[in-house]
Amino acid sequence: MSDTSRRPRKPGKPYRRPKKDPVRVLAFEALRAVDERDAYANLVLPPLLRKAREKGDFDGRDAALATELVYGTLRRQGTYDAVISACVDRPLREVDPPVLDVLSLGVHQLLGTRIPPHAAVSASVELARVVLGDGRAKFVNAVLRKVAQDDLDGWIQRVAPPYDEDPEDHLSVVHSHPRWVVSALWDSLGGGRAGIERLLEADNERPEVTLVARPGRATTAELLGEEAAVPGRWSPYAVRLAEGGEPGAIEAVREGRAGVQDEGSQLVALALANAPLDGPDKRWLDGCAGPGGKAALLGALAAERGAMLLASEKQPHRAGLVAKALEGNPGPYQVIAADGTRPPWRDGSFDRVLMDVPCTGLGALRRRPEARWRRRPEDLEGFAPLQRGLLQVALDSVRVGGVVGYATCSPHLAETRAVVDDVLKQRADGELIDARALFPGVPELGEGPDVQLWPHLHGTDAMYLALIRKVPKVPKVPKVR
Image 1 (cartoon, rainbow, N blue to C red):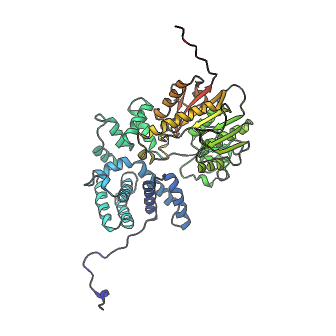
Image 2: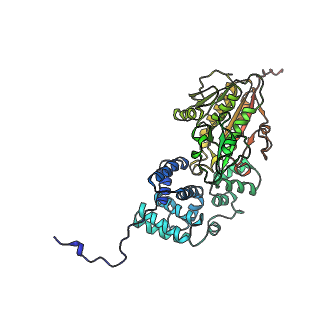
Image 3: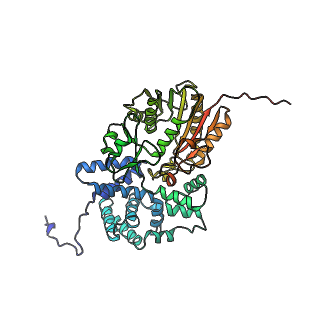
C-alpha cells in the first residue's frame, strides 16, 4: 500500500476551512425559513435568537445585527433584486434561492448598512462557503464585487425607470414595494408624489415597540418606570419602548397585565368602546378575536363598566392565544372557537361588536415586510366574500341602538370603504357614525365618517375603522302608480 500522505501537494493556496459567523448564519437560516416555509420573520427570528443566546453564541450587539440583516434584507428585497439582476448573466428565477438569499444579505450589508465594503464582501463570501460550498462562493464573490462598485443612490439611478416615464414602477424599485401595492396604496391615500413617497418610506422603517397597559391590571405610570420607556402618542394606555427595549424583560408584560400592541390597534378598540349608543351596555363581542390584543383591551374596558366580553375566534389554536391574553381579566369574559360567518349566538345579542376581519395585511408591512412579496391582487377576491359576510353577521349580532366596528389592518379601498358601502346598500338598518370624534387629539383623519390611520402620519399601522349604528328597519313603501 502506498503512503499517499507523503505525496507532494499541488501548487497553489492551501485549503482553508471556512470560518463560521454565527450572526450571518442565523440571518441566512431565518431567510430560508421565510422563503421555504412561508414563515414570518417576526415569528421565526425570536426563537433563533433565544437559542443562540442560550448557547452563548450571541450578545446584545450580535442579536441587533442579526435582526437588522434579516429585516433590512426583507424590506429592501425589491430594490436589491433589481441590483442583483443587473450584476448576473441570467434571470433571477434561475438563481438558486439559497444563493439569492446570501447575495441579498451581502447587498444589504453593502448598500444598506455602514459595514465597510471589503468586510461586507468578505463576510458574505465566508457565509457562502459555509452554507453553499466553495464553488458557489466564487459566484457570490464575483457578483458582490460588482455591487460594491457603486452606492445605493447610484444603483437606483441605474436600475429604476425615470419617475416621469413610469411613476409607479419607479416608486416600486426605489421603495421596494410590488407595483400593484404601490398603486393600491396611492389610490387609498390620494394626493401627489410627496405623500406616497412618505408612506412607502415609513413602510421600510423599523417600527417602535408599543406596549398597552391593560386597564385595571397595569398603569402607564408603572410601564414608564421601565428603562427606555416613553409615553404613547395617542392612546392613554400606550407606552413606547426606545430602540433596544425588550418587552419580555418587563414584569407587567410577563404577567399579562400589559402587552405588546400597536397604538393604531389600541385606538380602534377604544373608539368602539367609547362610541355613543342607546340603551344598555352590558354585552360586547369581539367576533374575530385572534390573536387577542384587541380582545384583552376590550375585556379590560368592559370590566370597568360591568360589561361582559365574548371573544370568538375560528381557529382553535388562535382561540388559545386569545384565552391566554385575557387570562386574569378583572371582569367576566368568555372565549370560544367558532366560525364568525355561522355564529352560535342569537341575533341582537350584543350592545357593541368589533369585527376586525381577515385581510391582506397591507397596513402592517413595517412589521411583516415579507407580506408585500407574498400577496397578490387576486387575494382580494378571496377575502371579499368573507369580509362582507362577517360585517353582515356583525350587524345581525348587535341590537337596535348598538354599535358595530368594522376594522381591517389594510388601507386597500377594496377591503375598507367598498365593503362597508356594499353591505349598507343591501340593508336598511345601519347608519355610519363619524368615527373621527372618537380619536381625540389624532390629526389628519380625513373627511370621515370612517377613519384611516397611516404609518407616516400617525406612527401606527394603517388601521381602518368604520363605526355603524344599528337602527330600526324602515319598511319600504310601495310606489303608487
